[in-house]
Length: 186
Image (cartoon, rainbow, N blue to C red; front, side, top):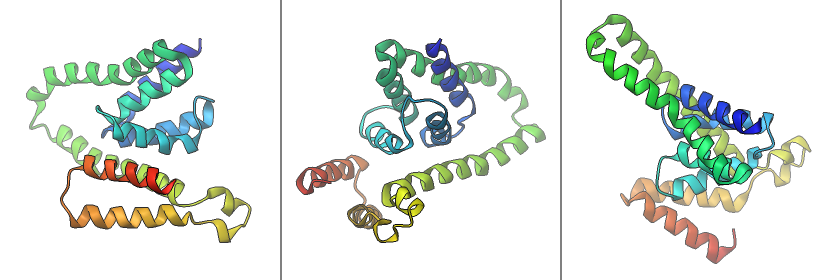
């Protein structure tokens, strides 16, 4: 029974997470609230693993979640659940889009989807930022002195500046971050 729930949750995510891997994050946070497959704290680790490995982030996260909870079969079910809506929609859209390409309503739909998807991605990015740089439990306990994660904040600023100043491939920064983590025990 749980395998069908896993499939249904990732099918729903694949159906409504328009905009790529980061758009799946609100759905993952919702799953963390409903199921014991992973915690909200684990989502940041899942992002790091998914961004560090080949392939689309959403698919990597579905595969990881499925495998962690139900082994190889779970990874297959979660991944198929995530990609199946895209396959169905692309086949359907490819048959009809050319016919309606200049349709006013189609243009209006796409003009509202772009900012909506941007908002979803920004919201998810903000959630990851807060979770990575701040101790949420410290706020809840009014322990303001330990609210900020100082090393993480320094790393964030350093990598933000480096990435905006030097045009290097993202793999360079991922490898550099891994080395910094190993050397300085983050």
